[in-house]
Image 1 (tube, one colour):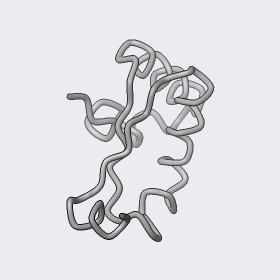
Image 2 (tube, rainbow, N blue to C red):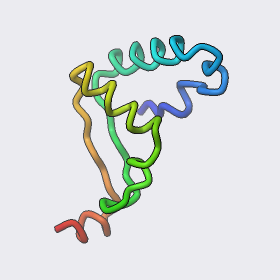
Image 3 (tube, rainbow, N blue to C red):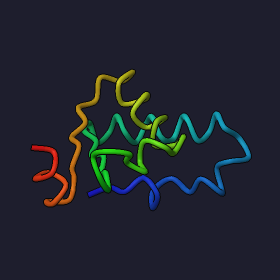
Image 4 (cartoon, rainbow, N blue to C red):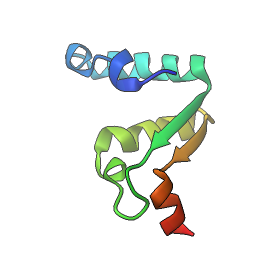
Length: 79
């Protein structure tokens, strides 16, 4: 299981946004799937963070399947 935060050192790569983009895209393509972990379905913090929106944008551009997961109580509330 690959976690972007652990594999893309954004602090180290921030000196060149092209390097961060290149590294992220290459790693996402190698994996071929993505999981978006939301804290809740309504007003999810994930959807308020620019990096997370960027992840979704790149996944869409690369035609990467994305699975969205929620805590069980949020799944029940969504129904």
